[in-house]
Length: 109
Image (cartoon, rainbow, N blue to C red; front, side, top):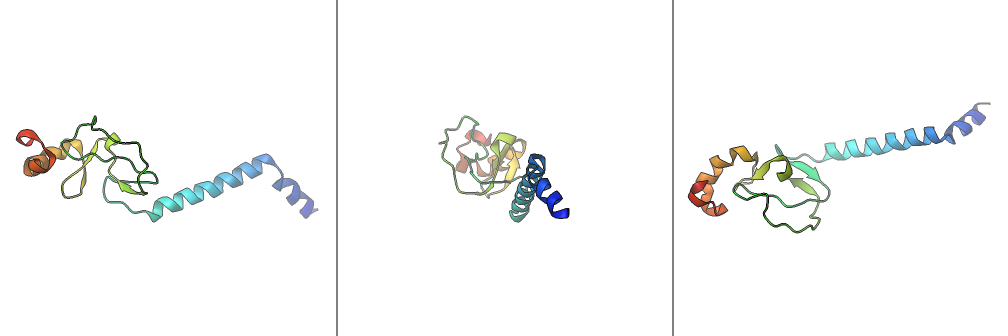
């Protein structure tokens, strides 16, 4: 009787869906934990363009998928500093004045 119940339960579409969902969620959660990024960075399987302090959101960028890794998400308002930190765009003035020559920022702003 138990084998018949198990057989019918495993053929139930709802049971199959729940099992698949649980397996996928477990894999995605394990993948996120494996990749430790620095503050404000996010892990991306298909990386995009990163903006630096002083660069406009209209800076041209090719739509090429870059290697998986930790990226500074400019679409959330973050920029990469000259020394590699990922900071909010509102904090860029602290770095742009000091490193203005590297970012082509006129008068450090």
